[in-house]
Structure formats: structure tokens, C-alpha cells
Image (cartoon, rainbow, N blue to C red; front, side):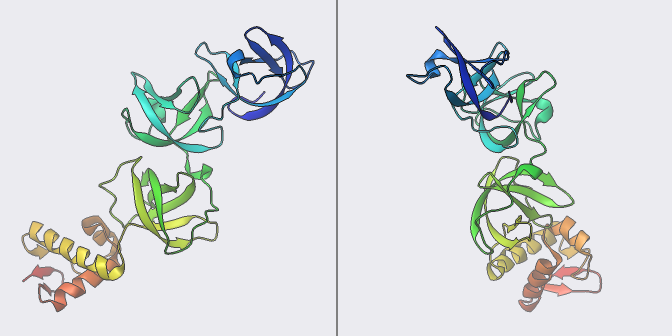
Length: 277
């Protein structure tokens, strides 16, 4: 029998408080399906598709319900309560799903909705984890380049960018040069698809169309200039790494905005600096 998965089992015994199921009629390993879930006219020998989990007394039990997440899957679940050693999530079954603190990528609060997967811990109990979701997300989305999509942030990486689950199930990423510092894990964002990779993963952007984004970038540069006392200690020839660190934008976007400000006579480009006029 497979804990944490849906499977077809055979009815081998009927009792007052439910029915017992097994993989084979003569199998001594059996699991209870409580009476309140047993379909009418169920007979010994019938096959039922059930999900196996453990009840509040740590006993293996069957249910006809479909949980929001099974082993090998991801789902966005609501945090019901936060305790001393973890949180409890609603996953559509009688017993709440436990999310240990060690499996959180950020501290959660009641009411939060976070993307998780299901795993079996060392005590053979089903638990939730906010980690290691990347390889579980699907790579075959129905979306194309330039379409606008909704996705949930599930991980931040300084090297790669912000990882997003589009529709809570498709693999996507916002590049690292885009500023996502105002967001947190679990936030849902609207973004445009800039590329569909050969393996099906999506590249996203939060930035507006170029002509609109240029205005916002130019305004941001002016604000940063004010923070530096009117003199930026680098110009548009600076390395992409410096521009990303100081401006949270790509070098190309920086150069376009600097060009706009120069033409409008709002800045002066010097050998190693940019000066606000």
C-alpha cells in the first residue's frame, strides 16, 4: 500500500464502523475506510480508489476524498494555524497537514497561502514542505510568448532570479536583474512571458513595455541621483553587475533610461560619473 497516493484497493471485510481494504483478497495488510465514507451497496470483492494517509492517532486510514496535494505534486495551501514546531495547512482531508519549521522557506502566518509539496518524514508521517519544488513543477504550459500570466513566488535566488509557479503548477522565472525585493514567498504576481524555453520553462518579466518602462526607469535614476547628492559614481559604461546591484535593472534598460535623461538635458554624462543638472 502506498502512503500519500491514490490507489485501487479491494474490499475484503465489512464491519460496523466501516470496511477493510487490501491490495489482494488474501492480503493480511489491511486499511480501514470509515463507515461514513463507504458507498451504498458496497460488497466484498469490490474495487475502490482511495487515498491513504494517517489519522490523528497515527493509524493508516483510507479516504475517498482527493486531497489538494499528493506525493510528487505541488499545490497552494492555506495556513490554518501556526504552532511551536510548525504550521497546519488545509489540504482537503479530515486531518490538517503539518508543515515543520525546518521545511519553511519563510516564516508563515495564519491565512497565508503557500506553495508546498508532500513528503514522508522519518516517522512515516505525511508532511508538507516549501522546499525542493523546482523539479516538481510542470514544463508543458499552454502559454506563449507575450501572454500575460498569474503566478506564485516560491523561491528567490541571487544567481538566477525569482522562481514562480504559473497557475501554481508551471515552471517559470523572473531574471535576477529585475527588482523583486518588494515581494515575499507566497505572493501572487501578474507578469508577461518573454520566452518559452525549449524544455517548456517560462521566462517572465514584471516590467512594462519598453516605452513605458523607460519613463519609470528614468524616474528611478533621478531618485538614486538625489540619494548620491546629484552625482552617480558610475556611468552607462559600468559593468552589468554594478548596475544591477545599484539600480536593480539590466544594463540595457539603464542605458536606455540614461539616454532619455541626457536628451532631455536632465543629466550630464561624464568620464566616470553621471551628474544631475
